[in-house]
Length: 256
Image (cartoon, rainbow, N blue to C red):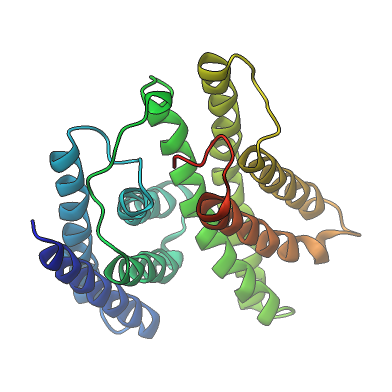
């Protein structure tokens, strides 16, 4: 596909994701909201498939590729949260974030073709990135729910948001942990040591520690009121790790 076609598909997906968010928030969309969401997802998925076909490998290398893939993570995870953990009420929060991501892709330079560095040619590449994509998807939803908890404290809605933040964090935390674990094994394979205090490793560790603190604070009566602030801080650290470190760092992870 041409760059213009890819940008138009991104814009199309953004409009339909955000339209489904509006319909779900208003609680008037019914099936229309979910059909709209499915249309947006199909457009998002077509971008991911295009990235794979153009490159001939899993499209996890450039920021454009990873963001495109990140967008398709929200719907499958929502289905899990709805069917297994009674989280159907969270639907709007699983639509607005991929909508924002698609807006970002529309504004970004299209670079679906990317050099595949030797360091990434490892069996640990896909599982490492995949578990982080799942964790970051949950982190974005947790952030929105934590804001809802903070703004509606003392109400029934605030309590529901609080339970949602905790439930989503319990789902996200194992994936965040696996990301660190897989990364350490991969680093030892490529660089000969499990940990190098590279700047991205440090920020990833800080992110994991903040969510660890959240889980501890959430279970302590004297500290539980501070827990949502940690959930917000955790997402801020995800943004730093995922975006700013990649764009500004010249460390061992700078190829990403």
